[in-house]
Amino acid sequence: MASSTHIMADELNETVVNATGEVVIGFTWPGLPPSFLRDVCETISNVIVILVTVIIGYKCAKLRLSRTAAHAFYCLVGMVLFVTQAFLWGSPALHAAFGLVGVLIGFMGVGAQILHMRANTQKHFTTNHSIFGLATCFLLLATLITGLYPTCQPLARMSEINALFAHRICGLLSFVLLMTSLIFSFNSGFMHCNWDHRAIVCFKSWVLLATFLAASTQLVAVVVTLLIISPFSIFAGKSKFS
Image 1 (cartoon, rainbow, N blue to C red):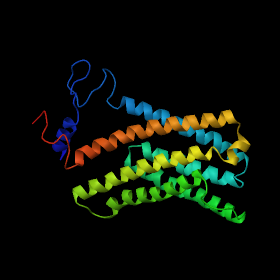
Image 2 (tube, rainbow, N blue to C red):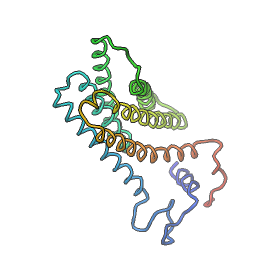
Image 3 (tube, rainbow, N blue to C red):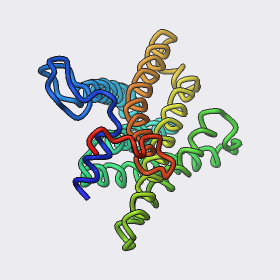
Image 4 (cartoon, rainbow, N blue to C red):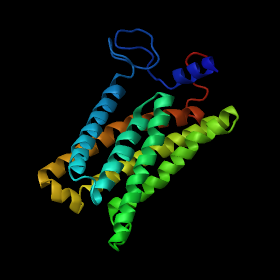
């Protein structure tokens, strides 16, 4: 299995030497690891998410989590911060821990807002923020199920790969929808009551950048995985090492 994986990886790289002529799996700049660009993108994305969470979370804490502040705090910490860590961390244990805890805390935030709106007889899911947030909840549940299923149910090798691929697709889509919902939340009355227009524009710009950087690196991984497992792979039969 290890040798076949190595061959498939080799097939996916048109360039097998780096800038100094050293033979490698894929292109690398001299002195830099192959994952350098991905690590930089994910680090920048992570720093932005942490900063946004700390700034808005601190304001929510000063408001003593009253009304919408409770929803904002729990969703930021759970869905935005923890789910982003699960999305970016490669360690299976940390990925699972951040994902499970993040979903639980995030759903507490969703529940807090639903209860608050019912108490004030307000209509549910009428804004872009709430619609994308609801879609995110469903996709996070799908991500959770596809992630847990292979660990709870013995599967054939190919079935396990397909389940994990579905898990990765659901995770990518839920992350993009989550960040889209977060960007729409900056248009809410809660944000405009606590920050001026310039700060809100900065929040939107930062989150857009973080979403693009993190989603791009994961999208590349999804495409590469799809090319490997697809029965119609364009790389089939073109190995340079056969």
